[in-house]
Image (cartoon, rainbow, N blue to C red; front, side, top):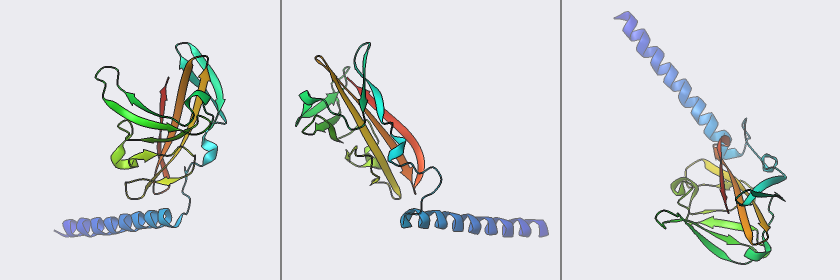
Length: 166
């Protein structure tokens, strides 16, 4: 009986300690205190190879655009069933301004639009945020886009997702 009581007491102390650790992590995330693994704009490569067609890649800088896409909005659909994956708007230089109505990335976590400006932006998930950047290339009559997204929770890096299409 004594052993059971000690185990229960130890379990309560452990749970209380874990609660304090979780509270400290939450407070650090809410006050902007950076934790290990927090990416910033340096986690985006200055240039990336972007596929514009089968067998053709172009090296472009972060934020680059494709002039033929300037001031336009496109919808990207699945080829097998024509369902909408996402919409994308391009700025005055053909750079990616935002992805919206995204069914590719977790809309319930990220929200209904992604802004690829490499700055931390809040997500729909409490304590969550993301950083995103885009590279757009054009060669002859072909265009390609590469998007990179870093997911964060309480300022800790959860993972990286990439999206590429041409």
